[in-house]
Image (cartoon, rainbow, N blue to C red; front, side, top):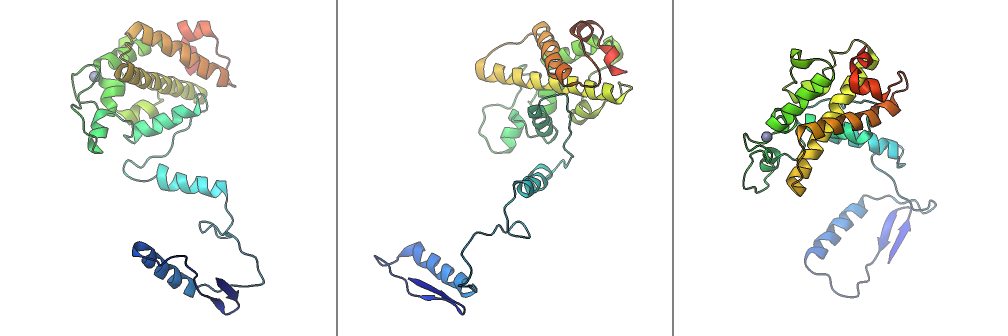
Length: 247
Ligand SMILES: [Zn+2]
């Protein structure tokens, strides 16, 4: 039973049974905290949110806190890239890839997951890092070469070998809209390559290069054409003459 007065809290505990063990320590800690409490009997009780200056909970403040504490913490501190031509889930995927937070086998191994092997489950030719999985794996690299061919570069351009460069480099386009479109294509391609890797690992489904390129062309068109408000994108040119969208 507790009485709250202007001079503080007074009262006595009425336990149905004697406290033992950890509960005694918790009671001592509670009493210590209550000593510092100055109660106002004229005001009603309520909750205060200690993370804002006015004590009022706000999802906006919480969102900012999560963004600053989680998204921008740790190694490889990098800003979150945005691209309004692809679904939001792809921005999260790109962020995870740039921060080495995709669950490739070497990253799982670093985090203490017990694995039989960290070699690439697709080619077995190297250890599976993020850059190997998304770019350097022989299955993946052939897909990138075909994508570059589709965009008219043929052998004059090689796929980026660094993850950061892959997601950020838009120098091949001359206009801002073109840079946005090219980045959206690269992100879509990477996302589908990663999805395919997971299907192979978890469902043993195979994805050969022609099927992969076709799916990337179709899906990237679906994602990008409907979101691109500044430049109409039609399927025929997307398939046969996509360079026109980069200028
Ligand atoms: Zn591989």
